[in-house]
Image 1 (cartoon, helix red, strand yellow):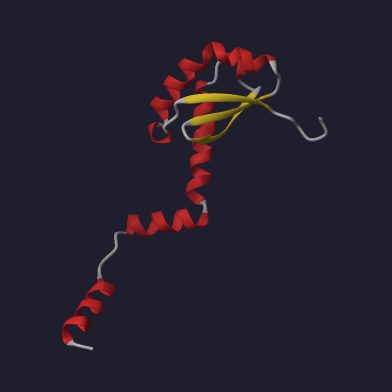
Image 2: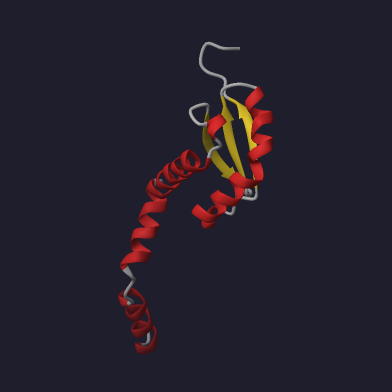
Length: 114
């Protein structure tokens, strides 16, 4: 191995990595970042949910910009339609990194119901 190749390999191994970069990779590997993101989403939903849906709905996940919200009764799906645009606006303000562009309601089926 020539001196140039040896020096290049040593340099690559000694490159400093930022603590933020290392922590970010560790959080991604352990799933901690996803867990924190889910909690932030649920908390934001609790703050922006229309009064009629509070206690009767919960945020799910965001897929391709669509927030999935679970509701306890089918009439609440229609109710959400009246408040959807305002809720999206508030969520985008609270969680801009989520990229929420729409909300889709789904009926929450509890264990024992079918």
